[in-house]
Amino acid sequence: MRYTLCWLATSAALCVVSTPILGRVTTSSIPGMQGGLTVLVEDEVTKDDAESLSAQAGLMEKKYGKYLILANLNSNGGSVTAALQIGRILRRAKSSLATVGVDAVCLSSCVYILAGATNRAVDGKVGIHRPYEPDGKETSQTAQKEQYRKLGVAIKTYLAEVNIPLKLFEDQLYISPENTKILSDRELQAYGLNQNDPFAEEADAAKEAKDLGITRAMLASRKAKANQQCPWNGSREKEEMIRLLECRVTAVRGR
Image (tube, rainbow, N blue to C red; front, side):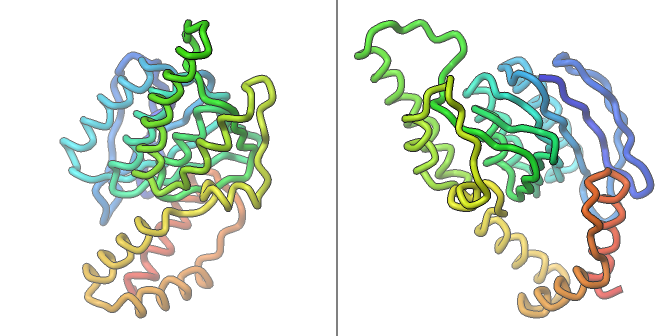
């Protein structure tokens, strides 16, 4: 996997393309927020990538406490263990958005990274199949069954943490890796993979309303007006997303 780290600023995104080795990054906070980080997930997801990103996230936590992550996904998957670790990094952030662009794919273990985000936007293809570790060596049915029992416990524990139906793993189990199933919009919605986490969304809304000194109902009204005043033109370019964020934050704060 290759990823690009960008710290979001109000007028520009300052980026450093990083190899899996921890590198230097240019940082800048978002006014009124505690920091922002974009992560581009491409190619094969590996354990080294997860460890490196974990170190980067540690620096963010040390500097800002809580921060924002924008994860752009375009991967055929890779290590299940690494994907779960990356997904948990997204979940530890103050807020996270995972996107699958119109020309991008999120297949196999990449789905667990998508699941880890509190907010999800899918325009491309998301595909599932039976999870497996690329270096698996068990040759007996009994050993494989025990291995999948343990893997199932780990994956179901994770899915419960991120509020995704456990049925996702159960359905994956009967789809061979050679026959990846591309999910329809209806299936994505059933698994919650193209929806925001409802519990995280409500918790964030309650805290935001409290911080602004208004009721939850008033916040909902302001956000509805913000959506009208700051329409999205469909572009996922960084400049457009930053403009949209600034506009809506200003509107919600009643300025």
